[in-house]
Image 1 (tube, one colour):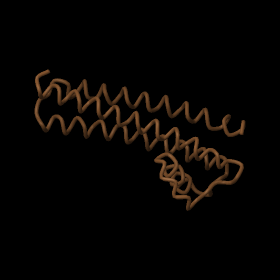
Image 2 (cartoon, rainbow, N blue to C red):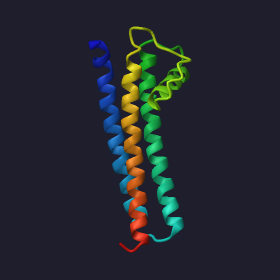
Image 3 (cartoon, rainbow, N blue to C red):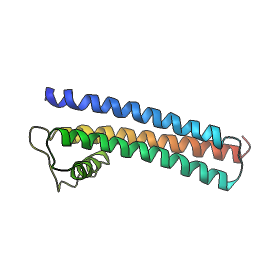
Image 4 (spheres, rainbow, N blue to C red):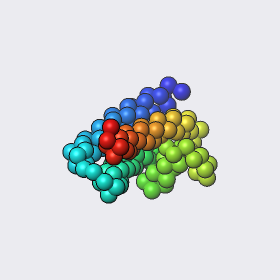
Length: 139
């Protein structure tokens, strides 16, 4: 169990740092490019932009977990490792590909990490949407 934590916690911390940077970057993108703009098109483009930014961050995090799984020798190809990682990160849990008994507890660890990071992504998108709505209502 200790080896799981020693391997998994640094990846979680790296993902938290990455997601924090992506979330702040997305909000700064909105402030720099759309903060003063009015109208539906501005709102759509602002929300679309931040969705692309946070989605890219989530995909990078999935890739980081996949690279770890590949490095641990759990999968033969990066594609297979990233697929397994995406299933864990998104908490889908297909179970069609499983890791060895030695490292299988990394799956739930990644799922918790993914749930938190996807939640933060949603919060970033919601912040932009709420600000745009308030601006449209003149508040």
